[in-house]
Length: 167
Length: 111
Image (cartoon, rainbow over all chains, first blue to last red; front, side, top):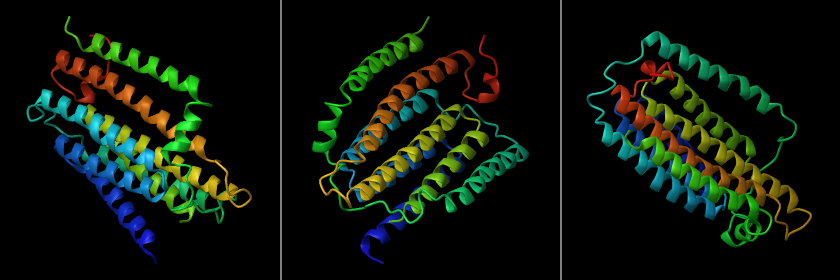
């Protein structure tokens, strides 16, 4: 067992445990902080897969921008006053059973799928995740979608302002 | 690393997200669980892109096979950022109207 595999298992365990903590935390601010830990673990996985550009973008966009936005909204709302009551235990049990059924449905399908039998994901080798290669493809083959996303951002910005402003 | 491990990890994260959406009542936590599900899918896309690269690099050492998967992840992140900004604006507006983010009180769209 070399160091890459050890890192893989540590990051996977940390990601799953923090994801569970996101769901079970009562305080929404704790949920946000645990979700940031999940994003750091997923960025670690990207670095292990040598997808360095996506690792940095994941940190900047998700852990940096989106989670700060969530924190601002939580702090604007003063969560101590709201959401005093929880769902009943019965409804929670039904939700957990539904999620577990989803998990159990997929496991045998994945185990017997012929397309992924004995396939490996290259960890350290390969430079397709580096910013040079991705930038070349992004600004040649994917130029039109890239420009359209700027329009999408503009419309999202206008929509957020229009929805959020007072009457 | 075998691709099954990545699939099982993503599946576990996605299922935890589903359980969170089904069991929590705070609208913001539900929204965060959706982000968790999006990230599980992103991780799976990157792992699959490296899997196809590993299949193509055997024949041609200078291949760029699998770049598309990582660019898809980039576009998913862009769309998720736009979605979060609009979604949080909607949640703030609902809080301003009902003084609650409990999704049980949000069972009707009008009034």
